[in-house]
Image 1 (cartoon, rainbow, N blue to C red):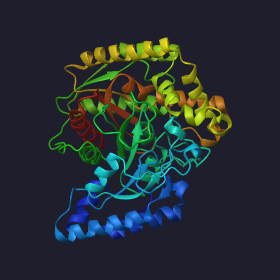
Image 2 (cartoon, rainbow, N blue to C red; image 1 turned 60 degrees about the vertical axis):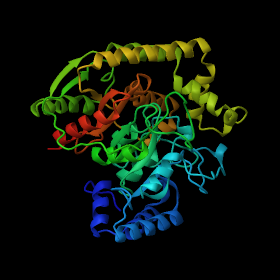
Image 3 (cartoon, one colour; image 1 turned 135 degrees about the horizontal axis):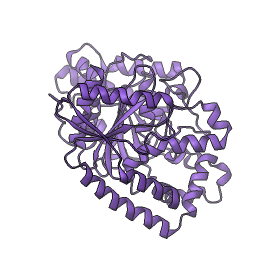
Image 4 (cartoon, one colour; image 1 turned 135 degrees about the vertical axis):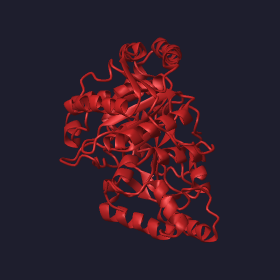
Length: 450
């Protein structure tokens, strides 16, 4: 498969398999050959699961021939971030400190994907310990952004390889994790759909942890319909009905504070166009300040973050005494977590719960909260790897808008909104409203691509 904006969606491939137009075996071989030709790092992968892919594709072909397909995505290739346990295959979390780690069993979501007939092509590159919004990894490599190719630019993190594996046309869907934006950032920067599921909706058994409070699992793909189908598989839930989803009559609350601060001109210019298109399509769009955004952002700036504190506790046995072996940008953030006091942690945690409740109340009567996914375009890899201050600034801006959804308990979808630049548009609802969110996101997607 090649880099082409017209690449088929996962559901389109599934339909082609069902009708016999596409063979799962040929599809898997095409994916594996394309990745080998591009090079693992360039394609977003740290390792392929070739034997498994061939066996799963052959089984899918047999089921298709017998009319016994397990799901609409039976036989469709998929990539898994190198946090998800895969039986008998290395799962190292982007860190040499976990070198050789080979789980005996699949993660629960990997098992569910296998049971649905998805074909595991390989494991994708991640930021070390999944702590970073830029997507760089000095140990295993940094795949270049697949959507903005004037110079090699960062892919976004921490699900860097997941995004590039899809945006580069190597697989139609990749699975990542989102703790502070790690699905939505790389999805937005690679002009993909990214779905941050609500906390607890998708099991994390067999997924290397970072933050026990905020870790979530979600897909990166080419359409909201693909995201909805993957959610049904990952959550072991019935499919979300997207039929007839329209923007006419939707009430959308557009955040006007914080999310536009320090934004690149291209992002600033894109947002009014998006909002006006939604109004023309029949939606009511009201721009307003969201006080909870400013309050939680200020608290995080003063006291520190839940992710870095819990991340250090989770990974300290891999870090303490081995500091020279850790990505220095990741180590700097882990050090912030180590320095965070118990009082600071509880202050932020309790405020997050309080403000999440307040925001849920504010959103009552609205169909979604919307704003730009990221304020900036992806910076050049050379810039952020050569200058620690440049990395810190870009990483902070990359995470600023997305982490609001994590700490304020939202579920969120990012949608690509321009044909030329990787600018994302966030659509969010309270965390327990995944199904309703997907329907709203599908309506907005249709309005913006009409």
